Amino acid sequence: MQERMQKTSPQDNDCPRGARTESGNYYEGVQIYIWMTEDNVVEVPFDKEHLLEVILSPKNLNDAYKCVVRNKGCGGVDKMSCEQLLPWLRANKDTLIKCLMDGSYRPNPVRRVEIPKDNGKKRLLGIPTVVDRMVQQAINQVLTPIYEKQFSRNSFGFRPRRGCHDALR
Image: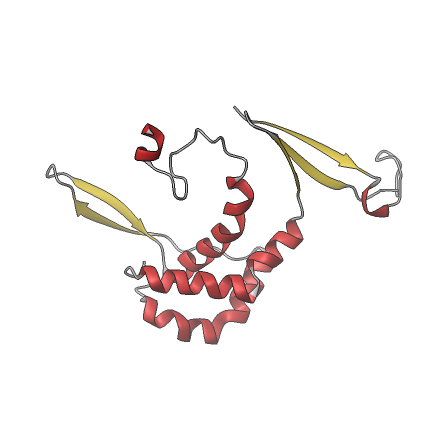
């Protein structure tokens, strides 16, 4: 079981010190999250602005684009294919990044598709647009290394490079 504690320290980064209740005098603290797992204690600095910059870095976005194109898949509600993503990004990259930075980006609805199962029933799939998949992949590439370290070694569900057979072993 994980528990999370939070602390704010005015000493970090040489921020001016002052009580929060004093009007007009505020200090900017550094927020730190501490996760306690069954194996260890992990302290992770929470730096939202820096994290978003890493997510939107050209290298990370390029890696996300390559991953989406490599995985192929069909288009979402906008019917844009993976082959059409590069020309779209060349024309709209700056607008996409600006919307992600200012928080105005809204993902499109997912396209619902039914696929047949072995037992004759149908399984519902939600297919996001290729642009939304690229944004999701960019976020995943940055957050997974951060959070993966904090999971229990005995956790196997929906984890990278872990599965049922690993759990049985």
